[in-house]
Length: 195
Image (cartoon, rainbow, N blue to C red; front, side, top):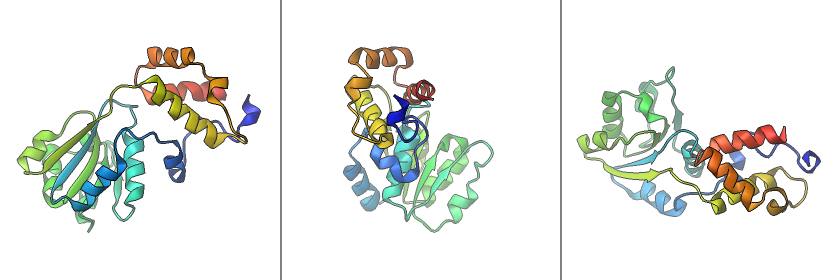
């Protein structure tokens, strides 16, 4: 089986390959239009860890590479770089690492903020009179999981792969039963299987 692939289909994906493996959960064109034309807007990708928020954020930012992306964690959750950047649109992964005061400052100073979060930041939007648009990352279907896996198999394969030869519907349902909608958990599990 492994000889069919150039690399593990479930390994990390290069930035330039995000579009080849992404199964968007929202209309990219509609969101893109809002980013370009809104006067004041916060777009929130909300959900638990492993649901695809960061992958979607990174992909969307690649469509707008003139605007910066800030990947925050507890050690680099500093607002100064975001505030000093001249862009009026910013992409922020894990905005929950910023304090409420920093989020309010960010929302007031940038025209559009697109961010990932585990909990809604609507309150900060209300305080700053910023229109709030929330996209929930929750749930999974067998069809979506089949598409996600198929795209990864095709990217890594030397030849055309037929997903049904490798994953039955029963196996896909079993993955969903075990991991629910945790895409990262499913992909990590499959990575181990293909190592």
